Image (tube, rainbow, N blue to C red):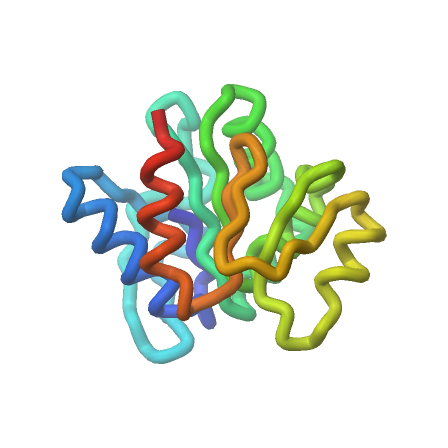
Length: 165
């Protein structure tokens, strides 16, 4: 799970993580910082810095949303990780604001996606990026799974889990 150093959405971290751990998955966190704090105060001591993630050690990658995730828009390491997981045919997920990263990085071109649309901008951003905004709670397109926000976090965790090989 990729967390922003601050202002990630607590529920979008906690609910999928619980689903996965209850299913027996080992879940690890990475960030550009050793410690992350959620919007509502959840504190996480991250397992790795982004630069320490070895993609071959993991089956999937999941970008947690919240306003803080947008700081990764220009982060070459975060972008490289997402693209490497895809090129290795591994599942990539993003929820809430995090699909905007995928739009920015060009990995949603020709794909269907969803995400937080509180500013009613995702359809336009998707069109610019060559992607189609669905408005669904969770959208799956190939190896990319996107979710619309905190209310869908548990559902997204369950759907994401089914796609990991």
